[in-house]
Amino acid sequence: MKVPNHIAIILDGNGRWAKAKGMPRGYGHIKGCANLENICDDIKDLGVKYLTVYAFSTENWKRSREEVEGLMKLFRSYLKKCMKSAEKNHMRVKIIGDPSAFAPDIQEKIRELEEFSKDYDELYFQIALNYGSRDEIVRGVRKLAQDVADGKCTPSEIDESLLENYLDTAGVPDPDLLIRTSGEQRLSNFLMWQLAYTEFYFTDVPWPDFHKEDLIKAIEKYNSRDRRFGGVKEE
Ligand code: IPE
Ligand code: IPE
Ligand code: MG
Image (cartoon, rainbow, N blue to C red):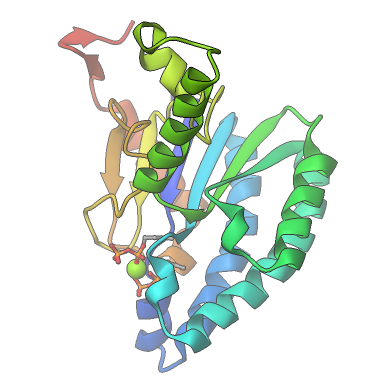
């Protein structure tokens, strides 16, 4: 089985999973968060080199205050626990998205985790927090425009690879496989630039129930596809 170099996952369905059990949405987030720790271990075991997960979108602030506060509490504890996971799996962790909207202590935890894990190189784990693809592109273009204004580059020098350097994912190869759990088939503003040639896999399994066997099923499906880039088959 050929294992994708980079897997991206839209972690969806925590709320519906909890509702089906007669529990509050926050319970689904707690279980979904615990599942993320397991999936990191499984991804590492399978030999995947890059994992990117969508945990909180720029649009998710619109949810009820109670839900958003619950998620912030969860991020606080998760970012702390993630250090142990980084140490165990020798994984480098990077947050993509705009952290400036978070409370100062969350921003500090993000910095600590990134600094703590920066020399690990067995798995590269990106967590999208307050991430939106449109926001990422706008922020990147703003920085690029500033560099042009400062005379660091000229408009004619702007090409795809230059623009990529201004995205949050700079230096990270594009995902080979995108998984979205819980039945929805849309991107919801996730990695729109980076997913240009990615294979998509949708499953009805809600995120808290998505385990190693589901991951293997997704990879098997990926293996059965002929990847093409502009009509040219993958080598
Ligand atoms: C994904 O689960 C987690 C976040 C977006 C934070 P949802 O909360 O979207 O769960 P559903 O889609 O409402 O079931
Ligand atoms: C996408 O899920 C964002 C995350 C998983 C973090 P949502 O549940 O917020 O997306 P929509 O509203 O169904 O598109
Ligand atoms: Mg959802």
